Structure formats: structure tokens, C-alpha cells
Amino acid sequence: MNPNRLDDLSGLGHLAAVGLVLVTLVAVNRELRARDFWTAEMPEPDLLGMLHHVALGTVADVAPLIGLIAPLWQRA
Image (tube, rainbow, N blue to C red; front, side, top):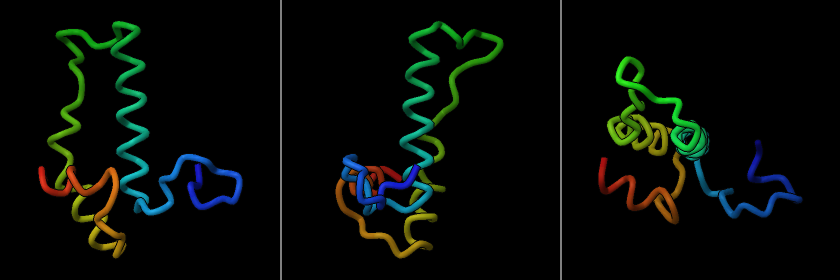
């Protein structure tokens, strides 16, 4: 997955790698939820609890705080 490829239409080229990982985890989590994968023994991961990692990775990568990342940055 490379949002900087010329044929990519996602509009996510401004994201740091950690932002792309978060978007991927959200999509996978959504699909697993739709398939009733999560149980009491194996609950959903707390993706919002991981936002501090996204914030740190974004700053370390010197990525702009625009688009999808801006509200997540404020929440972290």
C-alpha cells in the first residue's frame, strides 16, 4: 500500500506510515466486527487508546497535521 503511487486515488499521500497503519487497522476492525469475530474472551482492540502512537509517529515522520490526522492528533 503506497498512497504516493501515481495510480493511487485515496488522497492519503500526506499521511505518515503510522497513519496508514491506523487506517488499515480501522478497516480490518470494522470487517471483523461485521463478521462477529470479537467475543468476550477476545474483545475488540482499543484503537483510540493507540492514538498517542499515531501522534508520536506523525511528528517523528515530520508529516503535516492535515486531513484525517488533524482531529486524531487533537484527540491524542
